[in-house]
Length: 291
Image (cartoon, rainbow, N blue to C red):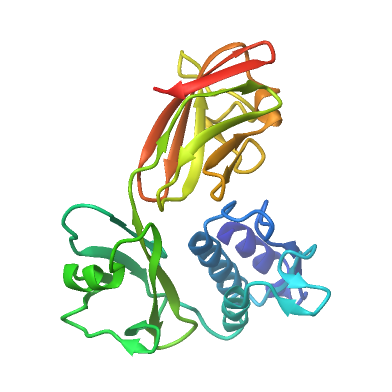
C-alpha cells in the first residue's frame, strides 16, 4: 500500500495532477457475515489507509455496496468505523495489537498486556463504561505496553460467564478511542460428524471463544481445497461458524476442490487455541472426527 501510494504521489500529485483513489475497501468485508474479518484488524487497516492517503494528498472514495452505509436510512452500520474514517481526514488514531483479551474460565487470572500503536498520540485513560480505571492499580502503561493487572481482570470478568464480560475504551490525545473486549472462555471442543460434500456440519462447542481461521492439508502436508497455494482457507466461502447452533459449517465449495482421502483441518481460535480435526472424503460421502 505504501509503495503504491508513493508511486501515485511521485508520478501525479507531485506534478500537480489531482488523484482520487476509487473503489477501495477491504476484500470480502460484509456486515451480513460476522467474523469474516476480525474487527480490530479491520479498524487498523482503515486507519492506515486513511493516514497514508492523506499525507500524500490522495482523495479516497469508499467502495460500498451497502455493507458500510445503510441506503434505506442513510445511517452508518458501524458508527465506530465511520468515526475512525472521519478522524483520519485530519489526524491519526491510536490502535493496539488486539482489541480482545481472552481469560480462561478456570484457574488463576494473571495480568495481560497489549502493545499500543500510538501513531503519534499519547495515552490518556482507560475506561469501563463511565468508570475511569486507576493507573497503577488497574493497569500500567510503560512505553507502548498497556498491562491490565490481575486484580482488574478478576473484577472485570466477574463470574467468568462465557463470552464478553466487559468492554473497555482506551483514550488518547488524538483520534478515536480503542475498544478492548474482555472475554472469558474454555478451550473449544469438537465431536464426530457424518455428512456429504454438499452438507457437513461439525459439532463445535465454542465455549466463549471465536473462530479465527482454518487450515486444510493432505497427509503429505500439501494444501487441500480451494486456493491450493496456501493451507489457509477463505472464511465463509470454505467454512462458516454458527455460534448459535454450536457448529462449523463446511461449504460445498470447499469439498468441490478436495481429493478423496484424508484431509487434516486445523481450526484456529482467537484465544490461541487450535483444534486438529480429520475428515475423510469418499465420493460424496464425508466423515470427520477430532484427531
